[in-house]
Amino acid sequence: MKLVRFLAGGVEKIGILEGDAVYEVNSLSDTTAGGVSYRLSEIRLLAPLVPSAIFCALVNTPKMLGVEDKETARNLLGPPKFFLKLPHVVSNPGDVIRAPPTGIRPEVEIGVVVKNKLKNATLQDVRNAILGYTVVNDVTAPGEFPKDFYYAYRRDPADGKIKMMLIRGPHFRNKNRDGFAPMGPWIVTADELPSISGLKMRSFYNGVLIQEGTTDELIYGVEELLIELSKVLTVPPNSVVCSGTVGYVGAEDPSEYKLQPMQGVMVAEVEKLGRLENIVAVEQV
Image (cartoon, rainbow, N blue to C red; front, side, top):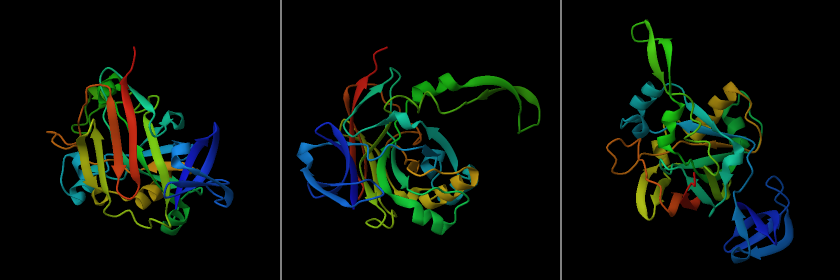
């Protein structure tokens, strides 16, 4: 089934989408029908949940590491790498996203919606915990990343000598800006989509194809990501774990595609999950 969160008459509700009709239910965890139905044209879709946490996989496809095959990529990457997005930067389908003057880019990803707490999880634990999947646009402002770089005296692992080195710093100014985590337009539950293998992933900016790839490119699958996260910390219920994105089309370095800010439409879409559109406007400084 497809689960949605929406506004009807100014009131936030949860529903099941069937065709162009939405049937109100009690909650994401209790999909007992409430007897009230709406047409899509009568409601406004919101991000399908308010996540308790957002965990994002970093460089989880070979092209984002500058290589072509997953075996080489795993050797380069080591265990999965993660960063966090703050839940309050989530935005809804159709919301306006404000781009800083340095520009932004889309990053199409699959968001795994976790319904049960996970800690030191087995594969079966993970499978039982997945409510479903949604489209996430891990909007990024690459021109802001250097503001979190800094220099420090550190021991160089190449020669063991302490020297001044450039430290890249956290993914903060480039990732955690208001509105930089659009989600939606719905959650496709795991019973409807038991496997996400081979799904096409694409993004567009003003109708121009920016990214294209498939879920088969993921170095670590979503179940592996959940297992690894649960070794590090407790993954709370209603969290979203993002898959990592695919490479950029036509870029000399497929891990980098910097867009100039402009009024336009940014799209992230995943086959069988849906199409997520947002308006981009330049941030007023």
